[in-house]
Image (cartoon, rainbow, N blue to C red):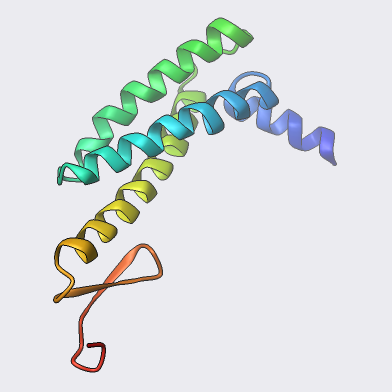
Length: 125
């Protein structure tokens, strides 16, 4: 069962899975988290994440190819990189934006479950 999972994962990421996870999900995931937080901190729209994360995904794919002999021009691997990094950065963006709304406008908004805001009701005060 475990061997089948690793083989399937290696096909999806177009190379060895364990180094891929370390490089893309951990190292470049941290970079994408910081990117999402920085964009939210500067009040930029979320669509600006798409271009920045595309550059990060291209860099991750290039390093994966150079260090671990993965496939450089794999569409499936590149899209996997992009989606993982975009998910992490969008989550970071949302958490940071909600925090900024709640701190800057405390009389209007309250944080709810880290990624949501809700209007302040008279009972909350």
